[in-house]
Length: 570
Image 1: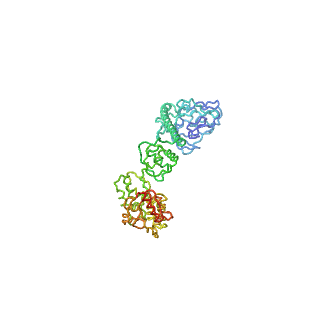
Image 2: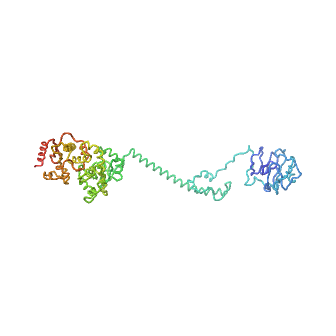
Image 3: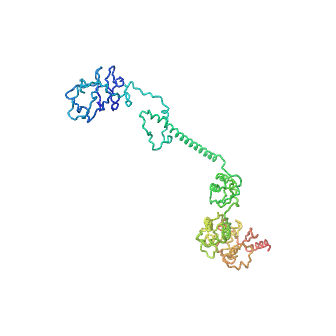
């Protein structure tokens, strides 16, 4: 037997019995409140919980002794209820027992012998209690009566109600249900465990309305996301098509009246120039400028510097404008220009008082980047002379003179290093790069063309030779005398020039001037490094301006002088 108790009869165990289930059904189906085998009617039990009156103390399985109710000497044979013959009726031998003292721990009471009347063990009480036994299958809390295995069938589902069908489709994700994180999913009020009654109404009405509103909002959100995604795909698809097959965006015409100052850095690529122009409103797109620059045969000649350009012009027009020198807003230093003229240019460009830049050059010459070989030379009028390299420099209002001068000196250092002044000077019979730079500055001023530069360079070298008995190491350059005078004259009297003993006067002082007299360009530097070897010793600007002719002897020189005088009407 189990702790829930069981009599010799064949009645089903109580539903709470853990061993409740299929316990050897033989194919008989009990009626409600009865256990029937074949045609035999079973006794009814009183409508009373047989376990309600039982009080358990310490329970032992096997041999057991009961409390106050002692079975004494009455013994009988206990028969297996499943081995009884047909027609015999059984009753629960433990029904209506009351154990007020618990289970005894002393000597075991005698067990009724099998075959004896089971009712005798209960003090002669009648075996049937139909008027008192409770029907456990007649209450709402009871399990349905057990069926034989061959008669068991799956419960047929009833017709689904509207609220049940809708509940099957109900979303559970918080995004669609709108449930807060702290919602445990349970209603505030308890439901019927079988889902009926008010619980059904609450689920069918309240939740349907809540779910409909939240699902509608979720649908709107999904639709908005889809619409945004389609829009993004369309936009980027159009951009891709434009980039692959469409013409780049571009303005039309030569631009509007508004101009802008644009600075192009050194070694800028086409795309970098295009980005600068686009950011300043000159062109509409970088691709349009790159295409226009590639199409123009001279597009690769665009240089760094400052440009004054019209806004909103076509890319083709922008390329043409940048190739036009008129659009350049750089500070352009011409080849052979003296420093004093460069200082004036800077003052004008920066709207400074005249002499401001020259004063800065005098006071800060040693801190502007001059190389060591260019310092500490005697009788030098301007230590920066020859180091304001001829080029185009971007200069805007607000720049400082010192910054501009540093750019020029840095450019000169780079060019001189590239030309190899330090390494080649001694091989040419000169005392270092300073003299080579000075020689190049003289060639720059006196020469007119590339061919002139090389011949002029040879004239200087030949006159510097100690074996020169024609001029005795006198250069006799008018340009040097004009430099010391701060002038540019052609007609200089012999008395004036021969009476002046200034170190820069090459008519009275042998050798080179103390320092450069101009800022030579790359052609003059190249000529100083590679003079001709034809024996030229004299030269004369026969037209006074553009044409220079050379001679090897003094007699030839005199004929050139006469030619010059004739051109002047002397």
